[in-house]
Amino acid sequence: MRQTEVCIIGGGPAGLTAALKAAGLGAEVTLIDRNDYLGGQLIKQTHRFFGSKEQRASERGINIARELAEAVEKEDKITVLTKAAALSYYKDGVVMVKQNERIIKIKPQKLIVATGGSEKNLMFPNNDLPGVYGAGAVQTLVNVYGVKPGRKVLMVGAGNIGVIVSYQLLQAGVDVVGIIEAAPKIGAYWVHASKVVRAGVPIYASHTIKRAWGEKEVAGATIMKLDEKWQPVPGTEKELDVDVICLSVGLSPLTELLWQAGCKMEFIPELGGHVPVRNEDLETSQPGIYIAGDAAGIEEASAAMMEGALAGLNAAEAMGYKVSDFKEQKEVVMKELNGLRSGPVGEKIRKGLAKAIS
Amino acid sequence: MSDCKCKDKDLNIVCRCEDITIEEVRAYIDNGVTDLEQLKRMLRVGMGPCQGRTCTPIIIRELSVATGKPVGEVPLTTFRPPTSPVKLGVLAGGEEDD
Image (cartoon, rainbow over all chains, first blue to last red; front, side):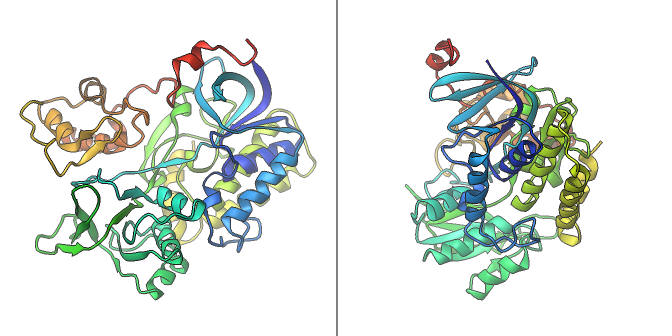
């Protein structure tokens, strides 16, 4: 059994910053990730981020991932385990991990769960046909492997992911026939949405997918309008000639380990589903278990990095590590988080967090 | 259910791991099976490699509509180890330092 001071599960934006902050305070950290690389979903983000300097504005996600991963690998206090999947958490505080077909048991003094989220699915006839993808899969194919998913795409969901992936498909030379959104207003930031609109991609608000067509693979889709009560309006069906249907209908927090740990959970739709109840320091109802990033509630990568920083600082401080500027470091992170969550775009998150923080 | 013809075509799959349609789930709910635990035991929803990550959010919405309970009050199933598939040989192989 391995002993460690702070174990962090997940090497995405939240986990990487958590590791750097905790190690920065002097804690000895074990960071585990199931992939053979660090960076999580950041490695697919070819677009520039915006926000403030601390949030790495105008940098591309992939470069942020490289930078953070390099810093983590250079840090002597951090042990990185890649291709290592956290299988379970036991009540005696042991994390069971599988790496290289071997079981590793880790007993940390503090645990930070930064496992991210998983994509939501949508019900419609023929949703199992080849050609129906999650937006994450399309982004992996196009941006990581340089493979086009098809020729003509219907994007379902006009949140940031749907709109950004649509733009990246256009950049890859794939035709985006349309973007549909069930809500009357799109969820994406205008910075991203205006790019696809300028490129001539129609966005249909208050629309849903009625069905997909095709025998062996997607050969078309029928979309239709929704009324104010989100009910389909008969007679508004529109046929689209597409061979790819890309689903970008939200994410759910990945929380299995937190359930196993007995953390108090709450269903909060604004945060994507069931999430752990936490305090301002991102500690769950189980003392010593912290959360950061999408596992704590679905938000942007910028927020995940700030939450990771906060969880890392707090976990290390709770271990007894002191630095003279701890308060200042924490204030900077809190200020960034509050900034990200301010204004009309942050309204949903603020509402969700108000229910999640006890 | 034997009278369910929903396997024929135009499949509307709710549980991708176990190939279960939303119509099958609704047929069971209509017959009074309004508990996720029972649905899981009878239909195997959520018992495949993804362990319900895809279907559970959808099925609890269906159960919420059927029972009138808010989604947050629909009881979930127990989250048991392991969270992802692991070969028995790996478990039997013991720990790294064994």
